[in-house]
Picture 1: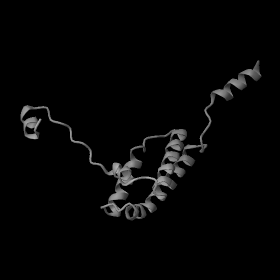
Picture 2: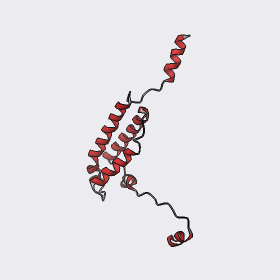
Picture 3: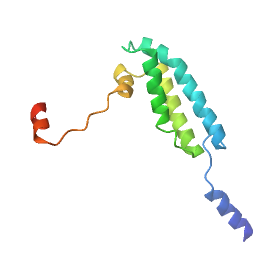
Picture 4: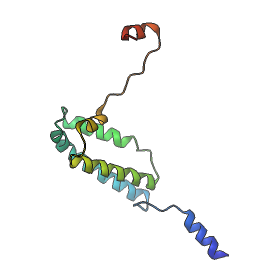
Length: 123
């Protein structure tokens, strides 16, 4: 009976994707951030983007800060894997300019609901 219980416990524990701890997952995320940070100037020139390197790096920081609250190493590993895939696609120019510009799209303004605002916008 104890062997079955031990087997059930082993099956119930989730396996890590890559990292065994939060600090290891964090290190992987920081390495990915550094790789993207170094690649931004090259990406801007390859895709002929009309922006400065500083703008690209600021957007990179925003994208990484969106997930700064994540503490589960498995989720961090999954995000790092996706980030590496995005980086590889960008480096090999498998993306088009529109795919890159999606990261820099302005947030849509919330529509106003009063009559005059709609009237002035032409709705």
